[in-house]
Figure 1 (cartoon, rainbow, N blue to C red):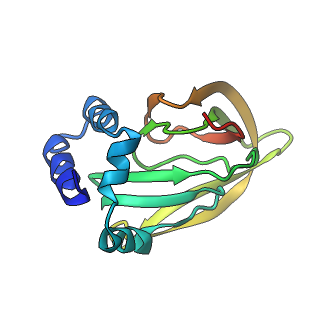
Figure 2 (cartoon, one colour):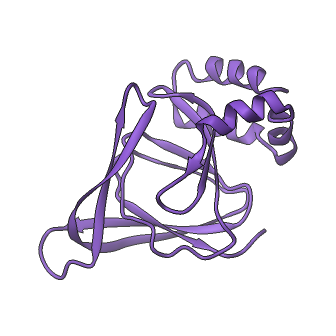
Length: 173
C-alpha cells in the first residue's frame, strides 16, 4: 500500500473519528507496512517538508495532516533518556502506537499555589493548523497523579486537555 492509498483508507475510516477507528488504523501499521508507505523519493520529500524537531526533543514526521479532523504522525525519539519534557496538554484526543522503545506517560495536576516546580506550556495553532507555537504560560506546582509505562506494540488513547509530561526511557525493543 502506498501513502495515497493509506490516506484514502484513513479518510474513509475516520469519517466519524473515534477511538476505536483510530486504533484500527494503528493496528494496520506494522513496521513493514510503514516502510512501504514511504518507499519513493517524491513521497519522502513531501513528508520531509512537513516534518520537524519538536520542542520536547523528538523528530515529528507528519504522514497525513487533515487537522482538525485527524493527523497521522510518527515521533522518533533520540537514543537518550528524556526526563525534562514540558508539562502540556493537547487540544485534540490522541491515539498512540509504540513501534519501538518505551516511555512513561505521566499524568499531572497543575496548581498555582505552593512550591513552583515546573513550567507550563500551551500549544496554539494558526492558519487552519498549518503552523503552531509553543508558548510559556507560567510557573506552576506540578503534581504527578499517575505514571503509566508503554512499550513496543502498546496502543493507548488519551482525551484532550489532560496535562502530562513524558519520560523517554533509553531502551530499544
